[in-house]
Image 1 (cartoon, rainbow, N blue to C red):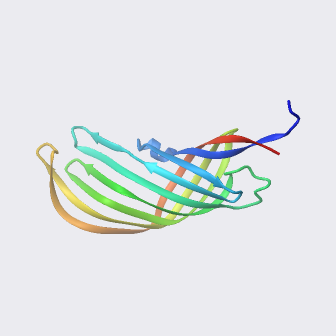
Image 2: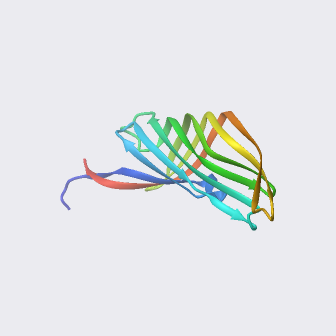
Image 3: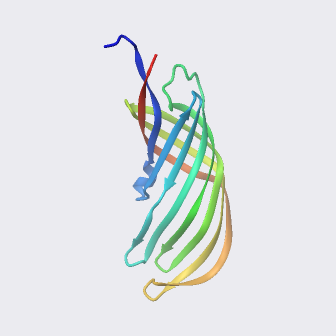
Length: 182
């Protein structure tokens, strides 16, 4: 024992959105604390499922970034806990098919503002709740399938814009810490 007091500070946090996990949509997030009040969160979502001989598919590749501001007295709070507000943007591509009908999009974008809250559940574990309101925009192609779901017949192209909730998360957070001297 050196007699020097130490405490831990998160180097970064690894996370997963439990709502996506429950829907069999693998995802991973990485959050980096920047000072006492700021953090940067990056996410990647990657389900790529073909089910029942291509009859159903959920193929989504999406990434996003969110800058967060943490409220409250940061001297008395553990890092990455409490209330926060953020700005986020992300995008990706998709193919969603249900039996003989489907939609493909080579690129979509979503951006907006978010609010969240995180609290400890164990020494290095947190639960985080997050909702985002913003805009989602995509160009899509609608199709029908033939030949035992192997041939796609393009029906129409279109554009879709959504204003409203674009993000909902309940995330399990694992802090990767480093020791620092007091």
